[in-house]
Length: 211
Image (cartoon, rainbow, N blue to C red; front, top):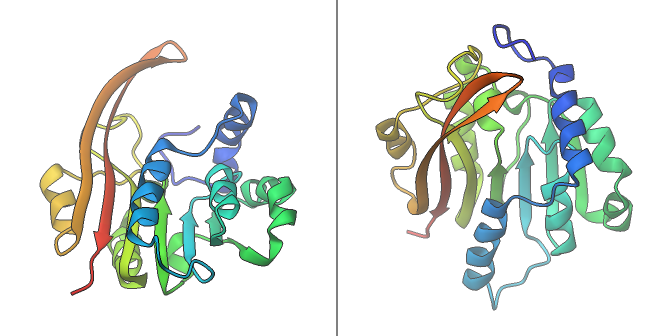
């Protein structure tokens, strides 16, 4: 992947192939969020719950939501990712509950979401539209709706120039007015293709509580 230019849809192909080869399951952070939602809504009607999966990729998180009887709007910048999602048997089994879109986050819209999931996806969008996309996410959440995802910290993958990074204080400002259920900053290093790569990101679960 070229680390100096704006990402193109084909840049994600190797990542998708890696996930498929590893038979990756749903993100642990998503599963944790679902336990909170299910506890909140134990008595609620689940037939109209909408989850928006931003950066759905090949659908490992989308299909988990479908299995749990959610309506899902799955959005990805890559046609290849969405095509792979639509090849999953769950996409056929739960087709009435699934809508897919190939689009950048800033070029589409949604509303009345119980959950917006942006799992390792939001910081890859263009910097100039990042704040507007974040405001759209917040505005789309129903009272009691949840956001789950990651934001990259200031030391994340320093050789990659086209991602959006935020400090902890900036993340806290973004979340002001929401109930922050989980906010953890993680830092680690790994060797990738012979070079050491530093990862620094925030895991977030936050709720738009009723006023």
